[in-house]
Image (cartoon, rainbow, N blue to C red; front, side):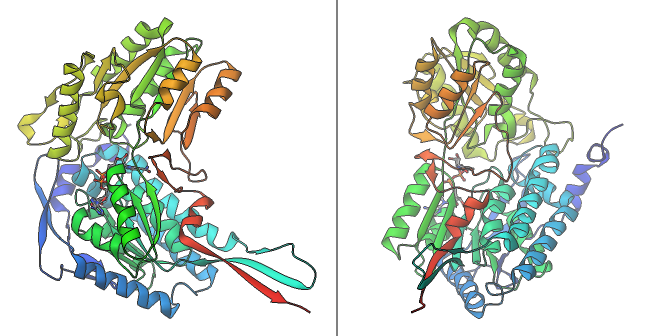
Length: 499
Ligand code: NAD
């Protein structure tokens, strides 16, 4: 029996879809004040999906002002926890009800297979919002253990107006990781989605309004990073900026915060994560499948991608052959076909970037084991084969720089110490993994790898209950879990003299 998504004609649905590109400010869909727009193109075939408002400083001002107004009114920030919880639960239910439309927007906008958008992106978004909704009335303040003639309470208060800037690889999920805790804590939000994938964020904000969120609490201003993103991160009336994107842009966001009002900054940035396979791991096929999934899922456009496969010398050949065979079997296809497992890269510049890195791998002396070609050029879309390089050394660019595409760099090591040393030899520290049946090796690696998450005998396992974020230049702060509230709340001490 085919599942429901396989019986739907997604091409027809795409033709019927109404896409709107206006910003959403103070509860209304509005064009950019200067009237500027940009064409939102689909990487599936280059078609124009919508003309989208190109927000500038004035649009950011208006969105921040509406967020400030409603924040000061208390219409959201001072609503009872139970009332806020009910609104966010409604919001989550509306996301689930709109699953086909949201999945389609995601697939059309950034090229991921519709089956992944339906199975991963929409459910994860709805779950995230519901999880934070349910957390709202379960968080208590503290009473400090002071002397008996004092009552000192420690309570959390919302920060105020928060700007969120997000990337295009999981447009809805990356936004939801901000939206959930920011709104649950009682803040107002101005969200700047990526100019490469603005559509689902705009629709999410409409659904939040429909769910009962007061107008002005959740604004979305699409636009270019160096214009709208910069205006948001530089704004003097924004209390915090929550950024997900590249390390290079994260650096700028920090500068803008420093140069304006010292707003609180949290950064979720890039990665170049090592996936270590020890020779004692008994199931090579399983390790190979996971290694391929770790770099080819979502076309390799994953911050936590296992882009460096580190293989112990004794199993180099059999593991490499398996991974290369899986790569060859993953043929890029039409993202709107429900059977497709590997879709399009997000746009032409990203495609060129990936192809340039493949060229660098070749010219620096790595061995191309599979892939390496642009394909489906006749569609007008952006498709690159899953690519595996062996014989990679730590100095090569494909071993050091984040490619953000389906390109795997395979290196070998002699023993665990060398694997850990190679693994940690990066400016990034987002994720890492070890495959072994040796308990001591697993624990040693888990402690020694300088990364926000270490997987043992798995890769990319995920749940909203655990924090996500990076060591080193992979970022500052954590998304997901209750720890995310640290970014979006102030801690207040109230000291009451009882003498
Ligand atoms: P990017 O840095 O180019 O853009 C991210 C966002 O920043 C976009 O909305 C963009 O418009 C905006 N931006 C660009 N220039 C700006 C500026 N000068 N001022 C303010 N905002 C600006 O990144 P990208 O290409 O969209 O995304 C890919 C990157 O995101 C990769 O490095 C990836 O590892 C990272 N990422 C990290 C995580 C994580 O949780 N750590 C998750 C997903 C993606």
